Length: 342
Image 1 (tube, helix red, strand yellow):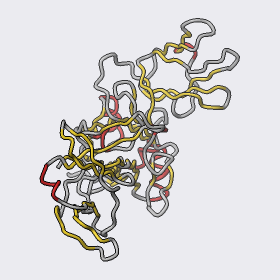
Image 2 (cartoon, one colour):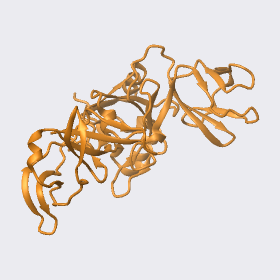
Image 3 (cartoon, helix red, strand yellow):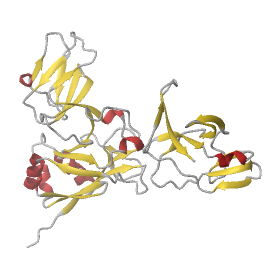
Image 4 (cartoon, helix red, strand yellow):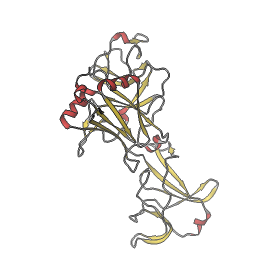
């Protein structure tokens, strides 16, 4: 006899870079402990590009579990260029990961769903330090009383925490389950770490922890639940380098968009790749990187902004690619550029 399942949850990893709006290169995996938990709860997970569906044979079982053990999912990305087209703070990917849980899921205005982050897009608040046991409290103050808790706020036993030296901010963690460690000075959270006891571990892009009692609470209130994390696409200053001598014969070149607005500054002559006669166009503002941008940029000679007319040299200019970014650290704020050569 076929067993029936109830659709409890859809999880979406969205990304503004992709035309589908889904973070397509992401995949979900989980550990043996989560595999056992899913089996005990009669849950199956059906992945798709950019998310998964969670189905339960008996939804009431979700309300019977000790709240301390979440469904722990690893979010992996097959595309190493994701860091180029994703708007995230720069961080060493070997030492940090992106962490989410559903304990403080926020209702998404205008959508019947919950976001697993506090701002419109995933950002610095979701990036946490990874540790195999050693942690350091920045600006450690011996006068403070520090508390270590798990993601639920349960205090971690002092037997699992060893201070390396008296009055130092360095501590060693041991005999803990994998998961988030939160550090408080009084009532204020001062640090968050993700603890993994594994010394050899293929670190994922992110961790998603779903506490089933909270999921059941949301399900009872809303019916089928939708959780989402939303990544924004990076914006860069675009620079077109016209290095071919063929462009020297034109009188007055401009780049316009499909609305016939001049969104690039007038060209400047620069030495590029030993070519002293290259014309370089720089966008007036940052332009989003996109998998399939609907915007169209044209190279025009003798453009008349009042008549919005001129001679079309290139009807559809090549768009910026995430494969190569250029950073200018000489400016007061680090600026990111996309270079396109013609």
